[in-house]
Length: 141
Ligand code: HEC
Ligand code: HEC
Image (cartoon, rainbow, N blue to C red; front, side, top):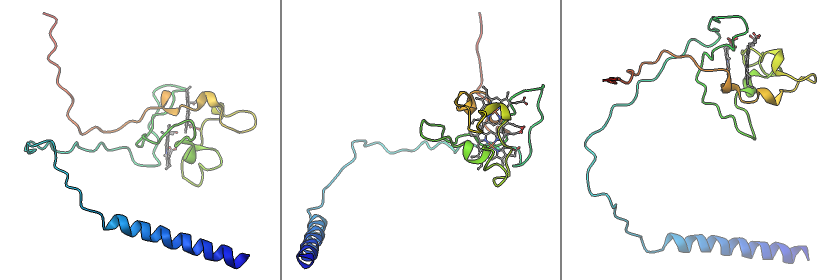
């Protein structure tokens, strides 16, 4: 019985392979672009902002201010995972050389209080922005 099953599996695997080969030999499809114009005006890439050195906190302006983030802050914060907590949870912070979240962010059992889940609601990144500011020619007249 075992032998029969192995043989069946082998035949199936082989037929799967031949199926793949058939699609490789298929007629080539010719695709032409709908856009006929050439792109001539190429904008230079945006200057990258520079963040304060890692490991250096930005001085707070007042007591209990949510500290500014001294690094890029595009880590995903989704229902399934929180990109910030991978470095800032009390268990991982030391290893990641980051400051653990403030104790106020934790429940009595040490887990993150979900009221603090959306980190960037209170913490905002601070960078030296090399990009020129957008001009404003607004006039009330
Ligand atoms: C790859 C690891 C890593 C990730 C991910 C990360 N951080 Fe950090 N964070 C650091 C390190 C390292 C520092 C600098 C050391 C410090 O001051 O805690 C820092 C500093 C900070 C500080 C300043 C702390 C202080 O006391 O001044 C805040 C606030 C912060 N991060 C918030 C965030 C938020 C919000 C996110 C998600 C958007 C995030 N971090 C994601 C590693 C990380
Ligand atoms: C509701 C606002 C709020 C949210 C949401 C929030 N924080 Fe904070 N956070 C604060 C405030 C306020 C402080 C300063 C606490 C103090 O000094 O009394 C702080 C402090 C911190 C500190 C510094 C702790 C220290 O010991 O210096 C870190 C790191 C931090 N938060 C990370 C995070 C991360 C990561 C998240 C998301 C998981 C988060 N925070 C979500 C308001 C918030």
